[in-house]
Length: 526
Image (cartoon, rainbow, N blue to C red; front, top):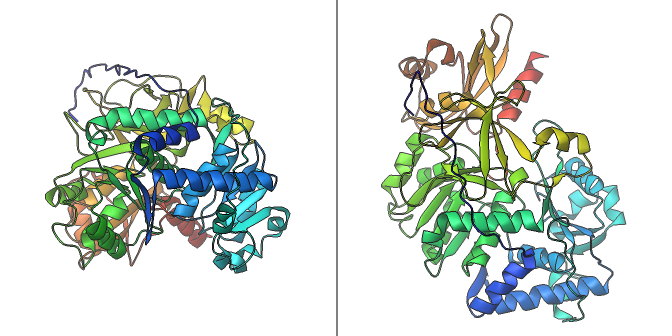
């Protein structure tokens, strides 16, 4: 970004495209008609065509309907990436129900909160988790289906009943909640993001329009490592099926098994977090041609260090773009263009039908000029209906249709956006506002650093001071880190405390949990 004492004011040119007024099931059924015999899903040794997928989810929907599932019912789906997840996902939506997204790694206390908060009446999960599930008293009140049970109702046994008695479709795409997507809860108990059919279908088409020059190429295969119980993974699964591609289900990301899957199936599309790319590049089995099969690589969930981007570009011929989104926006609002100028370190430009502003952090009302940081706020058809049963928090996050993201961003003279930190991640040290992402970007350039996370810790004199937790690629010292940063950053931004760790805490999509490190520090202060 160039700096200027008289920044040019940029107003984003709103790109408008026609968005279909269809339900989630309508979109898939259109793909079934067009790509009937194409392979829709690969899950280990299991493969199904589009026709077979439709037959399976309709049979499951028929069985659920026969057992009392009705429009508006909420089904908690605690299943990793799998064919069973996809079949259940579309069966519930065929009946006008709501999927409550549940992370299979959640522990009993977290699960109990989501099941109670969502008022779910149905539950689908794995019997292998039974020892954990038995600790949740509310589960006894739900109609439960296990994917892997040896007896009783399972997804497979219900499909085999081949019940074809289905009610007419009855979906209000603008008001019916298709997904309750629970946020990570880094600032308190997780809250359910209400995403309607229109929110999700709109975002699918917005993304498609932004990258269709690549997506219109035939025979795409998505490496499905991003968890589908997370908005990012769910959206990209759905987009893959919309274009008649093949979704390759990967239950859980592990760099060595992901590389084996890449070599076997030659996927063309991959969307991952920075830590996934770092893990692939640093896996001892990684070969220089492993990523050559890809046509499009996308990075989301957190800013990608520029040094890692350079490493990725050396080993692939794919178009590599960074983007941005959040659960409250179904999940995408920005992407770098697939054609034309791409800016390393930038989240790109707004996707079609998305308005964007940067406003002052204090009041959220004053629009900031080009080159000055502020809170990123967005408006578009993908923005959530609101938070489930939380009108006050909804009113705070959505104001006059604008979604306040909590992320601090800067727009440059050409209309490209850069995330420089989170509102709550901002460190205030000695009166200076310090954004961790800027410091991390510098630290990642050091050849001995594999992963890094910068955060603020209490300081009696300065208010806060800067700390960094580092996972080493090669041995290094605190002095190495300080000298590296001193040469590249203003003195007040240089980390005062350096901690070396074997690993950093991460979410299920590989996002480094800065808040967890902060909380550990606060507990140590007590």
